[in-house]
Amino acid sequence: MNLPNIISDLIEAQAKFDSKTYAECFSEAALVFDENETHKGRNEIEKWNEKTNAVYRTQLEALEFLVTETTNILTTKVSGTFEGSPIVLKYHFELKGGKIESLKITG
Image (cartoon, rainbow, N blue to C red; front, top):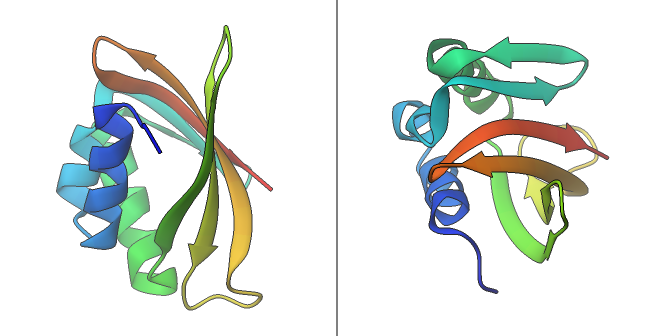
């Protein structure tokens, strides 16, 4: 599967539970929407990722990647220490200047 480098970097950082490198994949003012919460900026994104790593130990497996006019959608198999693992989620990315501007995670 041919993914943009920044999305591959994000998956790799998640595989290592490296929240700092994960957050560096985002622009300074990026937004993440997950589980009815919004996280703004690298600092909040790093803290959110640290928290989810501690609780869920999430691993991502890319299944499909679709590029549309407005977004990039990565379908993933997400596994971890949560009830119902693994599940399939969609990661909706907006990319700009080689960084992630926004990420919305949906079921």
